[in-house]
Image (tube, rainbow over all chains, first blue to last red; front, side, top):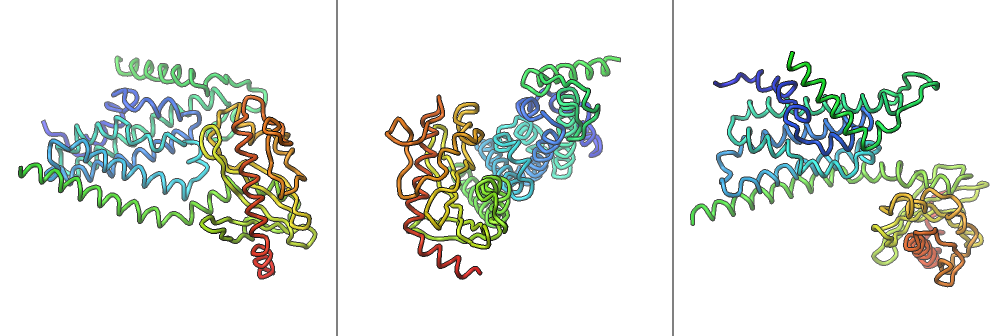
Length: 197
Length: 196
């Protein structure tokens, strides 16, 4: 059954939201979500790469020979990641310093290669665009949500704005590595509860 | 055979295209990246070194060539006299290059202060070269003509405990600025004279 373009877009926001439903792209999801800002920044960078690589892979899907397709996809993805890295250095340098090594690591993010291989290599450009945009925005929302949980509990702030005043004693462990796993686990749990109802 | 050729052609065209795109993006952003780095990485170090400067040392900068190396010289005016400069050099530390910004008082050729700009040293050990003001304070007042060395190498600087290699790198970079400065001093003075 062929899905409509809108359906391809919407599925990334809930039914196939990457870190929670597909359980893909966990490395950045765990590593950079100390704050909302980091989460959204990482999500936006990944979305850009995802949309651009999906479009290009879809355009070239009949030209790229099957045997070297993964190499071609990686070249395309790596090119866009480097573009993002340079642009972030030029315009959002403090955010670039915080995300650091995780920007170049988008190249090996399973979501990006996964969408190229499983979707864009088979579907037309418009569908691939909708798919990339949906999955990318879903990823951004997920990272933002996880970042919000960790920042609010671990630091008492939201996007750098203090929420509870000075009397709040933050759960510092939420902004450290174990907090990332606990936070992700709790969010997966909530997703599953909502789903099973 | 035909498929072989196609694979080679597609890959070649793709990599060539990607190389071209990246080169143009790099060219387009290089200038802004330099400004951002000045603002966020080198800026804080320059500000601490040339603390009492009345001007903005980042705005009043020029480049001086020493053979193949090019140094950015940041000029700080103190008491109406543009006789304080800051220059950056790099030396290899434990985890990669360590960038050190060195302030020099041009009147008596002494070190005004040093600050680590970029590094990839071990957090908690080598990273203290940047975070521990006591370590960099040791360089203050030293003469540029003498190379700086850690105590272990017979020098005057007490190394950070557990981070000898990083300390040596900071010494090396500071000494490198010192020797470059001595060589370039006439050129720097010339440039400062044209600035006013």
